[in-house]
Amino acid sequence: MYEIKGKTAVVTGSGRGIGREIAIKLAKQGAHVVVNVKKRVDDGNETLKMVNEYSDGIMVQADVSTRKGCIDLAEKTVESFGKVHILVNNAGIGIGMPFLDMDDELINKIISTNLMSNIYCSQEFGKIMEDNGSIVMMASLAGIKPMAMLSLYGMTKAAIIKMSEYLAIELAQRHIRVNSIAPSVVKTKMGESLIDFMNITEEEYEKRYTLTGKIIMPEEISDAALFLIRSESITGQTMVIDSGQSITGGFSH
Ligand SMILES: NC(=O)c1ccc[n+]([C@@H]2O[C@H](COP(=O)([O-])OP(=O)(O)OC[C@H]3O[C@@H](n4cnc5c(N)ncnc54)[C@H](OP(=O)(O)O)[C@@H]3O)[C@@H](O)[C@H]2O)c1
Image (cartoon, rainbow, N blue to C red; front, side, top):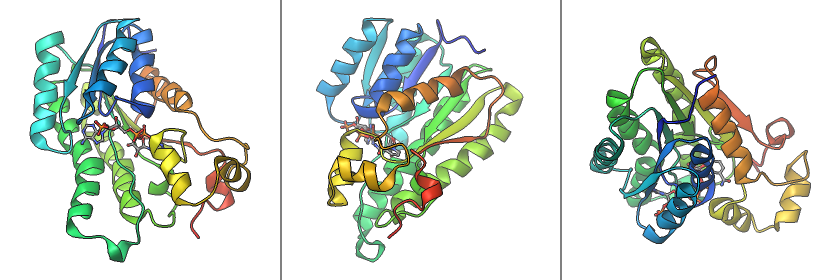
């Protein structure tokens, strides 16, 4: 079992939602945690406060959809903690819209935030990570099963799933394990806006679309991230956490 205590972990987009839960859980295990936000510094500081209850951390404001943002994040991590062992590529945006209506600005925003961030950060951190580390990326069920109005989002998440397989092969010699997590709707700001977008209530979503009768909580995703980081025998895999949605047809219509 990979020991998290004393290691340095970076969680992109950890000002709220799933990223915040992962940051706190890593801190509870004794990791030095680098919290990252794009612009909501207050959110980042709030996460940092929670992290510092259990371990020590720093907060770095950096836009990981850019190469420069990922370089800054890597430099500040090394400045503060010297080494880096764990990277969680979590930052993302979910925007639903018919494919034919998307303009270039929106297309670039979705691709840079959801996909380029994973490419840039995996490169910048991959170069400096200690051997025997771990990378976890947030994909989505939309990257496996098509979901209405989420075409470009789903395409970026499908690419992340493939990226975790390719990186698992390339980084295997250094014993760096690379995996992704593919959830369906999780109760965060993003998940709530998706349910609003579907024009149904949370209860209706739970009843109509899940086998479990309940929406996924962010803590369940952070448990999965921790499991993947700790396991020394899982690499190149995608863990689906979807309340049974994928076997019932998802919401493709
Ligand atoms: N919630 C779901 O239903 C669901 C389902 C499947 C997959 N996911 C994936 O899980 C991940 C986390 O989702 P979430 O639900 O926790 O989302 P969320 O509540 O919207 O939080 C996203 C976080 O990412 C940050 N972020 C966005 N763009 C960034 C950038 N360019 N640089 C740095 N930080 C950035 C945001 O910070 P700022 O506020 O400062 O911009 C925010 O703190 C995403 O990759 C998402 O696609 C979510």
